[in-house]
Image (cartoon, rainbow, N blue to C red; front, side, top):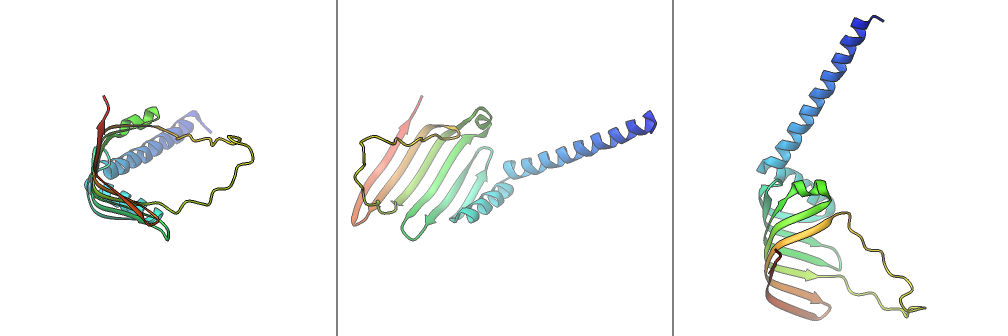
Length: 165
């Protein structure tokens, strides 16, 4: 095979890979930057994990507003109305999830019933190893009308808010 033929083959492979890269970047950009693409991706992921979403606006690059979010199983329920979050996705490159603001109204939390406690053989013999794959920073939080239901007990909070500097 001549040098010219090898050069032409390498050039074809290079331009093919470049075209695939451009197509992938354009697709990711269309999904993340546009409201339609973001809504499509979020509803697909939510359907996979069993979350019901209504009224999605915004995009994944800046933040989303969700009219209603609900996750329900036989023994647990999590629901939020008028959920809004703003974030900086570029921080994921540095191993952090930086949420600039998180807002919600009418939040209902009904965790599963607690398992019966067994007496430990030795106190403090097995500490769980809890570690998240990313650091989470939450700058502003404002949540209104929170209801926590545990068995026959119901607790209500008018609001929960906070911010970090």
